[in-house]
Image (cartoon, rainbow, N blue to C red; front, side, top):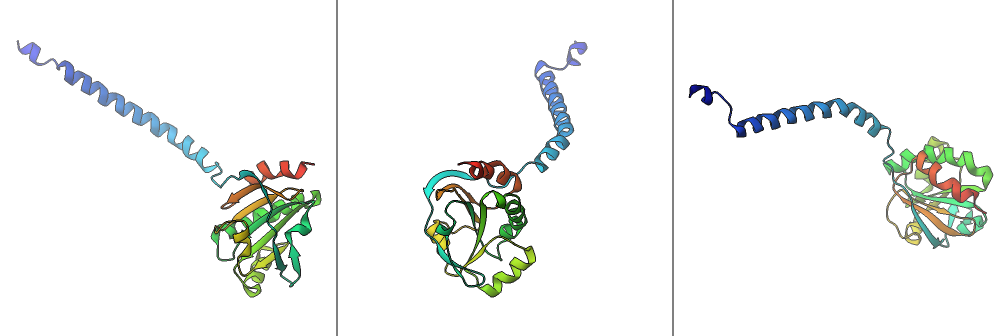
Amino acid sequence: MSELSNQPSPGRLIALMLIGFGFLALGVSFLLMPEQLSSASTQDFSTIPVEVNLPSPELNLTTLDGQAVSLSDYLGNVVLVNLWATWCPPCREEMPTLQAFYEEYRSDGFVLIAVDQGETLDEVTPFVEEFRLTFPVWLDPGSIAGSEFNTMNLPSSYVIDRSGRIRLMWIGGISKSNLDKYVPDVITEN
C-alpha cells in the first residue's frame, strides 16, 4: 500500500503539467519579445488624416511682412494649411518634415501655409529663422483660423484640393510617411 501513496494524484499531475506549460509559454514569449520590440520601434504612431469633402473656409490674414493674404488667392493649387504655435512641442517636431515635403512638391502646384495661432511677429520670426522655413507663414493673433476650421487643437492640418475643397484633415503631428502616403494623390489629381 505504501507504493500507491508515492504515486501523485491525478489532480496533482494535471497541476504540475499546467505549471510546466506555463513556464514553457513564458520562455517562448521572452524569445519573441526582441522581435516585437524592434518592429514596434519602426512603426509610425503619428496621426493619420481623416478623409473629408468640405468647403474651405474664407480666411484673410497677414504675412510676416504685413501683407494681406487670403486662402482664396491659392485656388488652383493644392494647399496644406498647418495651424501651429511656437510653444507647441509637436508643432516644433513636425516643422522639418513639413519643410522637406514642401520643397519636394512645391513645383507640382503644392503650397504649404503655416498659420501661427495667437502669437506676435516678435514671437514667430525667431522660430521661422530657426527652422529656415521657406513656405508662407501667416500671423493669426486672434486665432481666427482655429475658429474657421472648427478646432482648438495644435497642430492641426488641412489639405485643400485645387477646387477649394478640404480633402484631408489631421489633428496632431504629421509624419513624413503619412504625408507621403496621403497627400501626393491629391496633388496629382486633375
